[in-house]
Length: 244
Image (cartoon, rainbow, N blue to C red; front, side):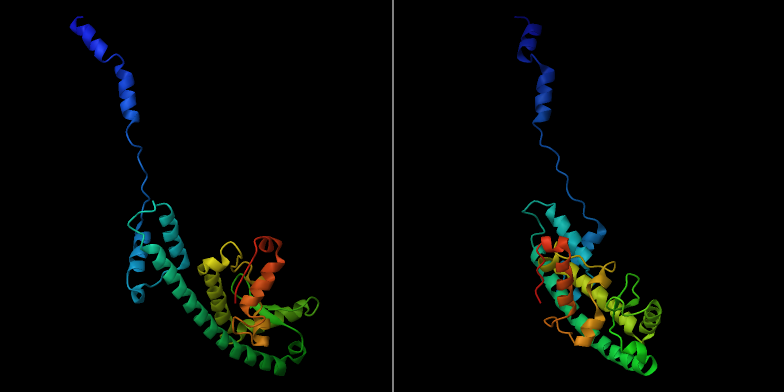
């Protein structure tokens, strides 16, 4: 056997050997990208709780989504319990703030009804309440055929002009919406609440007229949310369960 023949015998299929070698190389794994916003959120979560400021539910959700892309064993295993603890603290803070806001609203609404009785007695004696519309303005509520279009126009104007009532109600509505977003175990996939449908779900007039400021009370915002959501077929199908 000459040299050329021996070489040909030792490496009969050089192209096949190269292909097999390339195939044996490990596949490249895409590493999730951590942007500056996400990095800052993680830094705040790892800081003492007194220093963790301005962490919204959206930012916490971003961290959750990032963690879901990682392998089980990673350098961020300390974050899930921190997120859970932070959500719990935020929920308690929001509930406390919402309670204080409602107490302020109760006093203003009581004065509003007294003023309405003295100036618009005909309207004051009609069954009515109010809610927050999608644009943040207050909107009168009432049973069907109770108020005329003119009555509604007058009452909407008076409600929004009542000193402090509109901004307080709007703040409370946003706080409630944030609470729904934060309390994932209780609400995620079970009920949807935002400014687009808030006026269909919660009536502040009903709440304040009944003095239902406590979450365990009948006709509280939580009780109303429960009852209204149960009327929606899609919500009932998903098995809505809201605990007071």
